[in-house]
Structures are given as structure tokens and as C-alpha cells.
Amino acid sequence: MIVVGTRGSALALAQTQLVADALGVEVELRTISTAGDRSDRPIAQLGDGAFVRAIEDALRSGEIDLAVHSLKDLPTDERPGLTIAAILERADPRDVLITRSRGGLATLPQGAVVGTSSPRRAAFISALRPDVEVRDIRGNVDTRMRKVSEGDYDAALLALAGLARLGIEVAPSEVLPLEDCPPAPGQGALAIQCRADDRSTIALAAALDDTDARAAVTAERALLREMGASCETPLGAWGRVEGGEVVLDAALVTGSGIARTRQRGSDPVDVGRRAAAALWSASPVERVSGTVILTRERADEPLRTALRARGLDVLELPSVHTEPLRDERPLAQALRSLGPSDLLVLTSAAGAAAVRSAAGAEQVRAPVAAVGPTTAASARAAGLDVVFVGGGGGHALAAEVPLPRGTVLLARSDRALRDLPEVLRERGARVREVVAYITVVGLDGYRAAAAVEAVGRTGTCAIITSPSALEGLLDAVTVARLGAIPLVALGPATAAAIRSCLQVEPVVAESTQTGDLVRAVARALAVRPAVPA
Image 1 (tube, rainbow, N blue to C red):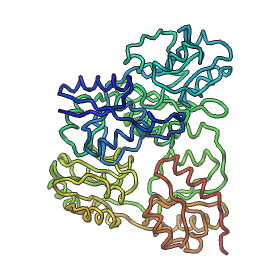
Image 2: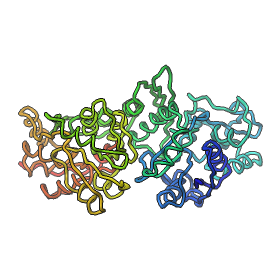
Image 3: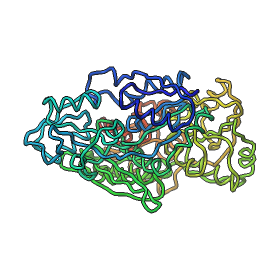
Image 4: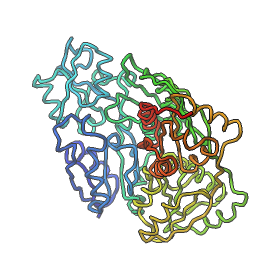
């Protein structure tokens, strides 16, 4: 018996029954009321995750074994301890305009009142028909359609996939073209979510996974994550697989029009990130003057593009860099010792690459826990089985990752922080550590001189990516000078190092994603202390 959790609406139950029938096992459906279901506030004000958090809580506690979600409702950061085990074959992602005459957009009168709870739909329909009045509308599908038929609204915008799953017929004239109203990332897709350590349920659900649908929505969600977007962002995206490549069309409604891009490639995450970079570049945004120092080894193109789009100069001064091991045999031996009951923990993309190199042709048999979506994407690209993604750094991962029956192997830098293994051991884990790559700290002569010159200018800000990056920058720049410019810290450990070394308070970015980093830089540059002589 598998207990499946779902919301109680007619649409949610219909979607969950589709999954239950496909699983081929005895199923008990359990309805769960979410914050979004109980609130009468506009959906855009509820925040991401309002329709899934209660169900995820039930899943984490063991009350249910499996959850079925509309993928567009799931935040892009995976909840600690949970994993998306399957994306089902995707339904038509387009939107539908339901009018009283059921004739679609062509029959919509001048000045019509259109109901939608989606800022995206509101923005795109307003771009199509600037004359209409858009009002918020709540209720299930039947309620919204009734409000149209009774004259409370002239029309309502709904998802075609939801209407089809409820057996409601739609005329071709009612369906909006993808270029006119691109769907929300993940729209039309159903996600099966399981506990990350429930291997049997994951295996059962994985049989329903559609690889093309997963690739398409992975690109869409990578775009959403990189944009730092939420349910309030008027962002549409449509991904699909064509000729073995992922193709992603994306559009963002701005104050002066619609920015659009099409990207394609073999790596869905990279496609999404490039689409984000293109939209950042094409979108008119508030401009900020100044220079931003990037201290990580490989700065991301979306971040560079987003910063430059805001009028900021970007100075790349990697104060740390990684080097491969001269002898991979200890790492290879540690990897060979792992089995399905163990757990491999990776904290960086460099670690994922090192593991792939050391493993060679051999398969790493242990599941993987990764710090952050970038590390997780690199690990999956290396053929590793990622079952857990922690979004709050190594300390948060150590506190939340489900512990295996066997050993936890940490494959990290030779300069890695101690908080991760300490927290794991405090929780009772058997921890083994192995060096996966070498971290070299410091700037060469040319970059050191550039750092000194940059921190002496008004309007310079630095993004400090790690305690090691801080140490490397301080090899070239004095404590007094570095502490006098605005600083952005990636994560609490880096923030603590800045406070300890410089006696200043940095702006801590909410995540490593482009949107959060750009917002952190803007906050940091809002206060510009004087640089000492």
C-alpha cells in the first residue's frame, strides 16, 4: 500500500488519480489542505510553495509516501530530504481564454474584464489587448468558469492541461498561441515527489519518468532559478526536445515591452542559464554605477551579463583556483569502497568533476548529496545519482540530509571547512573524508595590482565566495582597504569569516543564483563607506 498525498481540489484529485492508476500498485489517496487553499489573498501574494509546503511536510514526516504536484507550483530549490522522482509525460502547456460566448480572444469586447490570479497571464494578456481590465480571480476551475458565465467577468485565463484533465472541452479558438502567452515554467507537467532516502518508492515512481519532459522542464526551471524569479514575475517559458537537443523559448514582460530569447543545446541547465543571461541583457532595468569584483574561479556568464546590464563594470579577480590531484588513487579507492547504503557528499562542481575523473569507467554505486543546484547539475552531468540537494550551504546540508545506514564520504577540497563533518558526526553519522582536489589561494602579480587599484575607487563592491577567497584577496589588499568597501558574502561561513577578519558586516546573498546576487550587490552599493587614504 502506497499513501499518496494531494490537494483536495477536483483538478488535483484528477491529476493524482492519473498517477495512482499508472503506478500499478494499491494506493490510498490522502487529501491535505495547504496554505494556498485556505487563504483568500491573491495568489501572487502568497509566496512560492504556498500550495505544496503542507504536503511536503506530510511527506517528510512519513504521513504519506509520495506526493503529486503540478510542477509549476514547486519552488526551484528542492526541499531538504525530498526529491522529484519522476516527471510524467507533459500535457499541452498552453493557456486558454474562456469567454461567455466561448469564442476566444476574437470575441472579447473592448474594455472587457479578464480574470486571472497569475501576474504572468495578466502581463501577457495586457500586452496583447491593452484595452482590457485585468482583475484577480480565485476559486477552482468550475468556480472561475461560473463567474464568467454569470457575468462577474467577461473572460478568464486558465491552463489547457487542467481543463483537459477535468474533461472540459475547449475550442481551438480559445487556445492562446505560445508566442502570445508563453506558459509558466513547468506548466502542464506533473511531478512525483518522494523522500530522498525511500529507495523503493523512488524506484516505483521512476518508471513513470518521461526523459523528454524532464529535460524540457529542467531547462525552464533553470531559467526561473537563474532569474531569481517567483510567481510574481511575468516570465513565460516553453522547453521541448527537438533533434536530440533542448530548445527553450523564453519571454519576460518589462515596462517597455517583451524581451524574448531562444536557446538550444544538449545540457538543459546550461540552456536555461543562457536564456536567463539573454533576458537579463535584453531587459531594461534600473542601472547602478560602480564596479563589482568577482572572486570565484569561474564566474557565471548570467551573473556577468546581469551585472553589466545594470551598468556595473565587472572585474574578475579569482583569488582562489582549483587544481586536480597529482595522485587520484586515494580518491578512486574511497569511491570503490562505497555501496548503495552509503552516501557521497559533494560541495562543488570541482568535486563532481574530480569524482568523475577518479572513478573512470567504474560506476559510483552510492547516491549523492550535493550543496546547491549548480553542484547537483554537475554531478548529474557526470552520471551520478543525486538524491538530495541542499540549498543553504554545507552546514545546512549536514543538518538536514537523511543519514544513510552506511558511511558518509565527503569528497572535497584540501582546504574545506570543518563545520560539515562536525555536524554530521554530532548527528551520529559515520563520516569519512577524502581530498578530491587542491585549492590554491592568492592572486598573481597583475591581478593583485588590479585589486589594489579597484578597492581604491569609489563605488567598488566585492562578492566574496568563500573564506579561502577572502584570504586570497587579503594577500593583495589590506584589511583596512577591503573592509572599507561594500562586500557581498556567499553563505553564513563566508559572512562569519568577513566579520572575524575585517570587523565589518557584509550583505549576505540569499542564494548563489543570479537574481539573488544582483539584488545583494544593489543593496551593498546603496551604502558606500569612504575608502581610507
